[in-house]
Length: 350
View 1 (cartoon, one colour):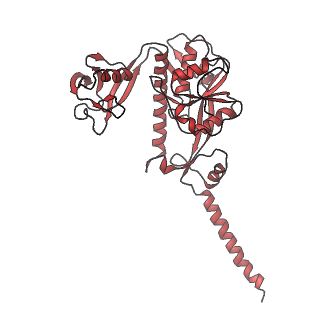
View 2 (spheres, rainbow, N blue to C red):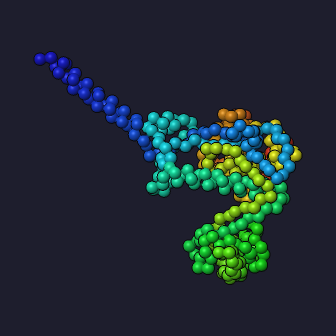
View 3 (cartoon, one colour):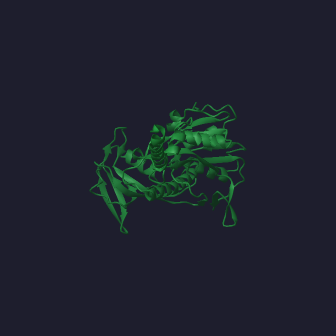
């Protein structure tokens, strides 16, 4: 009996089964999301839209000036659930890169979240970031605008929960007309813990309620109302940028608007990149994927990177020929960019 000849078919079958298992494993989607460096976009450049040329940040209703240099917003490319699929070879490849970002999707998104929901949320966050960028720029340029504030929801122990309703517009507090979030907060603080009289617009009429004030752990006074807002601006700003979502371009949008509305160039011939959310009062907030955004900016040739203060400790590698500055406010970012080369006293992320 030829034992080798009898064993060969069985061995061939085992090999075929293994190949099938490997093939199936490779093409089964994994439960991981992968973040990698995405494209960068120069907010000072001109873009073609349906055969016409526009600035990426197009401003109407105010005098604008030529710009010099680049102000690049940075992005990350995300693959994996719930918006797409990540396969085993992709996960393994990114796992061996110097700065991997692989996260179980369940840690990033609530169960049952759909890809469409994530895309809608990102689109809404991008729209909000653009409005807040305009507000922050106008605030810095000392140009008036109006911010309409609406009750959106209430904290668990809010003293306003049983008085106000969602979509009530906050018109005045203690007789002071409210034109922005900062003013609302300051007016409540001025009451020093006493109840405040809040006038709201509801269904076309105005109603006034006296609402108790509570004191938070940080010592500030509050009424426990979560707010939504709409803006009335004296200028029209259109931002021509597609297929990018989220709030993290706010800081760079703000700098681009200021650069175009002031005679002196902020970029001043330099290749600047950065990231960070922006509030109308100029506060810069942290974002996700900071190391990947730094790498994207470095690949594109940026020599200055503006990073939110809250992200500095997450940056483990500073590329050669790049200085990364920690910024907590718009004013800090402008101070960094206005300082002569090598003379800024601001903190770097290194």
